[in-house]
Image (cartoon, rainbow, N blue to C red; front, top):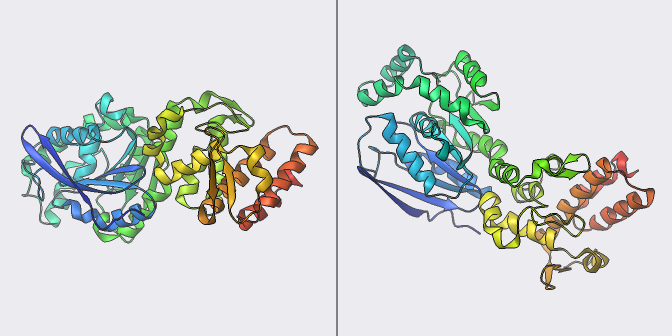
Length: 402
């Protein structure tokens, strides 16, 4: 279990400042960038929820804020800081930016090299189109118009470059909007959707502009529900899963369908991420591996250690030696890569069963199978009901297995 109460401190030396931050958790990495006038601690309730769900969170005080040095004068300096933060992380991060943090993130993503390191962008009540009159009026209302005057003028001068950066991003975007207290308008959202049609929009009516402070639990839920699979999807596309044939389309199509099944069954994040990548090392029934076993760290960075272990066990399972023992309270799983026997029990065994059931059901739905093969799948799922009765019942009721 990851200890979320003891963050690991981070220090990043820039040419004109030292930035201080912290990280907690393990799993897909989220880089959290706070709003102007705030500090990294504003993210702690969000981090607690995301960490509990199986994510790794990194948050820095931005320049001129909190423990970090430097001055907040120009957007370019903030963008360079974000690029340096991303360079210090494994590829495939999710960047979460609120207000100032969102502007800095968008500016950083204008650089193609930085863009390649990012799996997706979450904008927290922030858009690239900044209306000068409306922004200044909002800042005056909250008493911050004179706090960072040089930065405000500079950021407003970069609207065109922010629009271009978003238009060229090409990866998933989530916009989490506030309610009546937000300066973001419906027209702003429409312009963002024109620039980045891949954007998902979630509105939190009970929040204003500073959503991380006002509605942290709802914000964390929105991020966990929509964004935490982005690093896995980015890795799958990089590995060519979208070009490999599989019954029902391409391998990536199959992986996403299996993932949707377990999502519909309210499976844990560990299982959802594992199903999305369950063919990464090949399986006893599907020999084409996307990743060699000496590159397991790449998958761990995308889905976390616990989900990667489940993927490995599923791929390593020697079915001829393991399946005859299904139904035992503790399952001796024979590793086809090493010959070792691993005992699965309790939650690990239930997760293994849910993944197997979902995979077999999708095969039954999409592949051209003989009646005997369909009966064999039904028998397998019936046996797995010992470990995952709810998932098995859902699958056995499906017309493809009738």
